[in-house]
Image (tube, rainbow, N blue to C red; front, side, top):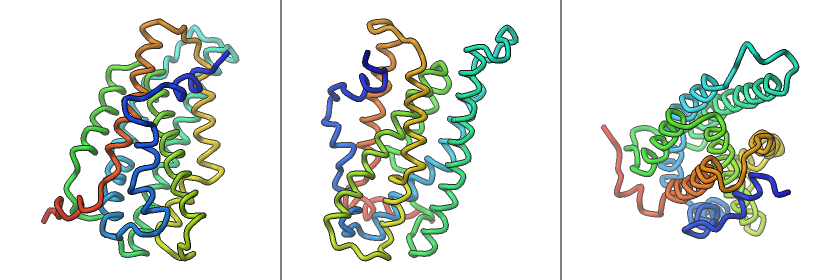
Length: 240
């Protein structure tokens, strides 16, 4: 039987999946031609997502874990809830580390991440996170987290493949970011999320199943839009 995540992953998306995972920004990050200004502009948006929206989203999911005093210690329900908690707590610890990584490497490579205006695409993404965490159930939220991280892993794996074929210097600022989202620890995290999602019994054709399909498709759409286009940083400018 095909797992839920494998099924979602196989769905045809309104736009090609590669539009989200092989964007021109990722190509430029991989071959080292992305400008520091554009990369800093993108990093500022990703920092808003990671430092503000992601912890709020995960916190709401943790608050929504369906604990019950009727679940005996060692019961299937209690074990699942404990696993959900463990994975979500790890995701919070990881995003705290990641924000520190952003700040450290922005300073190291003189990447400007201060005073950029927030993009509409960033607001759209964080608004959808808020909506799912407020209106959805725990599985909706877990599918959303898995989808975000799976697309991100695929995107940076693509950038890594471009990097391998390019003559990017070992000390180029993009190398650290490519490594951050393709390392074994991140791969394990994505796989753990997939395993968690797949532990739920959701029947095809049900309203819940259809809702999860829409979550996957929406995340792919949001991920594509999140990558900036060259020149966009010139139009956005800085806030005072």
